Each structure stands twice: as structure tokens, then as C-alpha cells.
Image 1 (cartoon, helix red, strand yellow):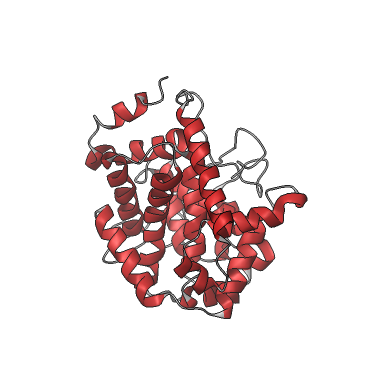
Image 2 (tube, rainbow, N blue to C red):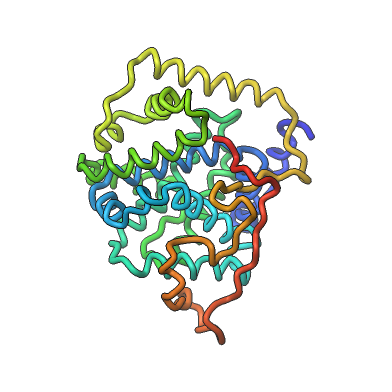
Length: 313
């Protein structure tokens, strides 16, 4: 398959109708690693908001089980989309996510911001460091997946365009970014998880490279100093060189999608594996517009990674 063959197919589709298919092509074929890199930076952005990081700090989930917390966040999104967001399984995944969040009193505006980071973060990373920029159809599809996810979570005021998500994202950060000790604790725990994916000898430089690609307002809110300019420039050049090399490769064949590979679940997972252990004692509630199911929930269907190792990031 030619490097731009799938892009030409995407440009012939209608995102309003085909946004889930386009999203799968983005995440499984065109930009699988870059999408995860963008998602990882989105996690860190959440921690720049004291109200969010204090809640996460109180739960101690990142300190006690940071890798599981990271994996569960990625996998629940994957489970919501893999068979279609309105499929039986997609709706079961959304109900599971909602019962996890239902334990906490989270303001709607915080839900909106976290949702916006999952749309804006991957888009900005791919445009900056991917082998090409996202097309208009791909950008719209990211926003429409985010909108549908927000609707299923019962969030009000969810944007319906990428431009609206980006505006919400940036306005919220200008108002809410501020340093708090909890920000640094949760961010440091997450950086330790990300660094642990690499051999011990290179974990310190890997952490510095991760910090080198973050913007100064975020670093200030997290309590980290900006990295020296030569390191930032070298990190940016390395990512752009990687993108140039990928551009020379053929496109990923349809029979070889790259799916999430979670270190926490080397033998696969079900919905019941995802989230804190106490979540399963909470009864699921119907999604907005959904009548209560006959049983407690739709049975979780197993997902098994192709390979027991998590994808390197």
C-alpha cells in the first residue's frame, strides 16, 4: 500500500457519517504511535489544573498503580470505539467508565477540559511531529468521536467541531493553569511510569526529552523548569527526523492494525479488568437516553493483544 493511499480514501469519506472508521484508521494505521504520544501529553496537561490533580493525588492511583491507571485510560477509550460507539459493547464500555467517575463529584467544566485534551492533544502532536498533518476529514473525525464520547458520559455543552474543542481547551488552561504541589506529585508519578518503558540506563535522559517537548505554561504549572534550549532543539529534530523516515515507508497493510498493548494485561483484558477494584461494586446506570437494561450490565467481551508487550512509545 502506498504511503498516501489511505489518506486518499479518507478524503473521499464524509466525516459526519464515517467518523468512527476514520478514527480507527488514524489510531490503528496512519498514526498509532503518534496518537499515543499525543494522548500521553494530554494526561500531563490535566495535571496542570490544581482541582484535577488534587483529586488524582488523593486517590493515590498514580503512585500505587500508575501503569494500570495509564493502561486503563487508553483501553477504555479503545473499547468504546472498537466495535462502534453505539454497539452493545461500546455502550457497555461507556457505562463502565461512568460508574468509575460516578464516585467523584467532578465539575462539568473539568470533564469538558479533560475530554478536550483527548481531541486537541493528539491533533497538535501529529501536526507537529507526525509524518504528515491531519487532513480536514481526520480532524473533524477526532472532534466527532470526542463529541459522541462526551454525550455518552452525560457531559453537557460538548463542542461539535474541532475549532470549538480547541477554543475550550485553550480558554480553560489560561484560566485554570496554576502551580500546586499536587500537580508535581501526580506528574512526577506519571513520568516515572513513562520512563519505566525504557531500560534503566536511559530513563533519566528519556524523562528530560519528555519534558523538552512540553510548553512553558504547562511546565510552570507542573513545577518543572524548562529544559535547556539545545536539548529542546535536539528533541524536536529527532522527532522530525523520525517523521521523515516514516514518510518513506509504505502504508500499514489493512491486515496488520496496531492495537493497544498494555503492560498491565499481558494476556489480554476484559472490561471488568479496567478501572479501580471498587468500581465493580457500583451498579452501572443507563446512558443518557437509554432505558435500564434487563441485567446489571452488558457482559464484557474479552480483548487480547496480538503481542504480550505494550507498544513502545
